[in-house]
Image (spheres, rainbow, N blue to C red):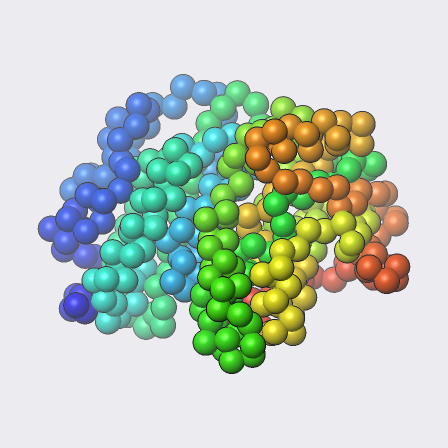
Length: 333
């Protein structure tokens, strides 16, 4: 049923279909989502608070999951567990109740999975939007944090899981008919769509935090964009090796069919870790004991050595230019 309303959603609809389906209670939440209250109230006991917001505009049918995972990942890279979420739903004119329900179910399931609660936000029907937009703010608190700028020349670069998991899931879901027309096996597409369940790196980061020098979430711009950002933040260069970068069969199938570079495809789900060379093996072992695959993909170098990707054929490629994510090249506008 189409929601025939503009602006804020009616209170009965809001509490029945949104607030009532989300995890909203936590020990440090003194006031959460409530009618007529203008802000959440938290009792924060730790000295440091990490806060991050992210909009999901290209997530399509997976936007609810992605909104929670992507915002929370950036808290986890600080070595903190995300605890609190603020969620803004900007819904397209003519949105169907079932779309809202699916988004909220995804948000609730993802929040419960990472152990966070929704403490507030905003919902409205926004005229002129061609698609639903979800903006999530995640927060975490603790006594010590990691900073990307602290990565050092000579550090090993470790990647968890595999590159381009988010992009693979989005493309396999949103372009399924096209990919089947191009000969990609439906069973491969089913598995690829299922990568959405692996987008959180909270577990990865909590396992790595005590050994890592710095951590970063490679999102838009893919793995190459993520390593660029870590190098720029820390004042370093880098060299990474294509043959060491884990890519799954499903990702290769989707990217080959669409003629795109998986290393430039949005890569939430993998965690980029900078660690001293002598502790790299220890960190990989710690991750693998926790059930998370990890690989050394390269190292940070001096800034004067530039930003290099050594392809599988041995040719070194300069990758210092800003990266436009492949997602935007192939998704319909």
